[in-house]
Amino acid sequence: MLSTNLGSEEKLKRIDEENVYNCKSSGISLVKSAAIYGANASGKSNIIKAMRFMRDFVINSSRTGQNLDIIPVEPFLLDVESTSNPSGFEVIILIDGTRYRYGFELDSEKIHSEWLYYVPKNREFKLFIREGDKFDISEKFKREAKDLQELTRPNALFLSVIAQFNGIISGGVTKWFSQIMFIDYRHQPSFSQPLRPILRSDENRKAFAEFLQVFDVGISDLKVEETNVFDRPELSSVPNNIRDVVVKNNLLTAHTIKTVHDVYDSNGNLVSNIEFDLDTHESDGTKKLYSILPSLMTALVRGGVVVIDELDSRLHPLLTEKLINLFHTGSVNEIAQLIFTTHDTNLLRKENFRRDQIWFVEKTQKGVSTLYSLAEIQTRNDANYEKDYLKGRYGAIPFLNTSIIEEHLGVKSV
Image (tube, rainbow, N blue to C red; front, side):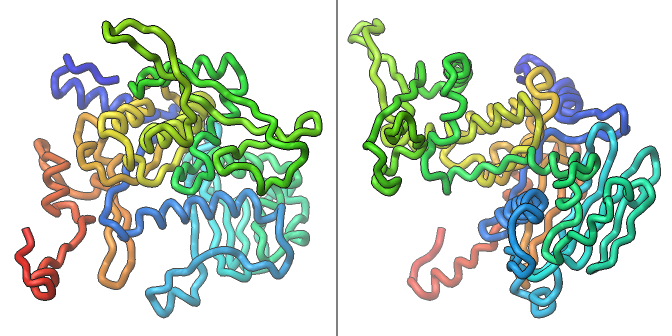
């Protein structure tokens, strides 16, 4: 974490050093996090959805589905031309020091185009280009491609097909996609569900409980409670708060997570402890924290990209800042990235982010969302990012038409 004893210039220098990875083999610097701001309905969540669709389609397009299956892609519906045009997706990624550029264009029926390039040294070279059912494959990639274009369905990605047949380059690209973790606590059937794989081991449970002491939520320990619900009942009969169900010894066995709280007497002496059910008794903020921490810890230990929509929702601003700083601290994080959307302007400080880590989404009158970085905007050296953003100097804030309230309700808005 940043020391409060450091001077302003030293803090900013530390931010420049700790908030980036310097990939010496490729000469590229990558930021460890990206914060995305914007008004409600500006398109922030759609950016996350597009990223998630691309990941899932790269991983699964060749594994499941039939030749005529519909591709679940949603075109932009607020423009007449866009509704009939294919949607495009592209990423530039770094794998073992080599940069790749991969992308595709598609509609609900088929892949219109697909491409993969790489940069072995300084120049970019083609590995393959696909246009409809036509494939242009480089000599370097022909051994890996193995004439698999003949087995590639119109609604499946060529890259995914090759990866299924153990292609080295294609496998590396698809593995990179598989390491992107999307956290959406709002649609989890159980807030404690992500915790269960970690807590099945006593060693992991103890380490996780100690890690949680950093966040001061009043929980001293965690326990996994195993319950034999019924003798081979239907799954629909299992209570909603018991989701992790396995068949064991011909019995349906369910696991619930208990949080342990210390109990004190009037003199402040610890006298006992009490167990609560995580899903039903803890606060919404605590449940959200517990639901996202396993993925954050996995990324920090193993690497990968974590993407969270509305990171700050239900969390105290200082706790949100603490989570972000875990990714910025060099001694903790050397291989992971965090991408998140937020409305917490308290985070918009030079002590937290470089300008190229701050992004904005703004929607035009025609409903088109544009994503841009603070690094693209000219700012003063002494700029206050939070104040300037709220004043509208960077765009991406809501336009509040208070005259409608005054006209229809007969009141003066404040």
